[in-house]
Image (cartoon, rainbow, N blue to C red):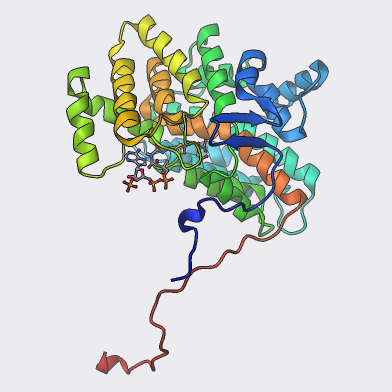
Length: 376
Ligand SMILES: CC(=O)SCCNC(=O)CCNC(=O)[C@H](O)C(C)(C)COP(=O)(O)OP(=O)(O)OC[C@H]1O[C@@H](n2cnc3c(N)ncnc32)[C@H](O)[C@@H]1OP(=O)(O)O
Ligand SMILES: O=C([O-])CC(=O)C(=O)O
């Protein structure tokens, strides 16, 4: 049988100057800046600029970007109506996917064919500004509440907390979410980014590309794993039950959510940042059991399978400790990743070629004649 790369493992599909995922070393950088340095010294808006423009902003450029994003949060009435009328028990990722697609109906800039890169960038930034509002709005409406007006004095992270909860966000919560946004902003040719690139490479439009990406992120083997982690911790319930639970999963050959990675063969470099935040938040809440259970799961998986925690493992406890409903964890990932998706879409269009791999055909080889339906 001809050799092939199942799941495209190890296949290089394009060039990118955006994020460098160094799997063997466990390092991640955006445009040459380590994520450790970025979370220490930058805000999420600086990272958006970095990914979209290829360099860090000067102060006046950052101020202009913030102003632009904050001025672009209004959703078309048709999308608001949809968010109000969507079934209240919908999965917020399904709502987000549909709403992103709907946004395209109201934006004449979203054309197909030879791309106009300045318009693609405008639309991309508009999505960065609107995706969090969509998530917050659906959450408010499903609870029968109004959506508070967006606040131009608040950052991306701050405004999301404000619009989703209706409460003044604390500096601490804003900082934590901002760090989470930076850590989730971009990550090489992950599955959802690949979807976005495949879609845009047909010279389709940006809304279609991001719609593809949202649908791809939702799956539990990708962004959906963060919700799976909390469900798993709740199912286990107590530190004393972790060993038996994980042994059971391994025996049944079931996946442990938040563990393992296609590229990182050592610890995901984003995990320690989130682990630190989760530990601090759990202690502040007086609920250390979630992080204690997580640490034990990670230990068993390292010892038994040589597998490490990925970004989704500790982000789950961070969001949970912030009081964020579990089904908003993956939408929050999508909010942050929209900056990366749209930057990657732009990069794809600057030097694009249609993605069209092959399949190894394993069906019947001999061409047979179609028998009449009565003889089948
Ligand atoms: C943001 C992100 O997308 S990060 C990833 C989020 N996803 C998850 O956390 C879901 C759990 N993890 C997984 O399913 C996988 O590790 C993935 C999807 C992330 C990577 O998958 P792949 O590179 O395709 O590895 P694959 O699934 O082939 O696993 C290789 C081996 O490790 C095992 N393995 C990998 N991850 C896990 C896990 N989480 N739990 C148990 N076993 C695992 C597999 O069973 C397999 O074992 P085997 O060789 O004995 O059959
Ligand atoms: O790179 C991947 O395959 C998944 C991942 O960690 C991400 O998208 O952040």
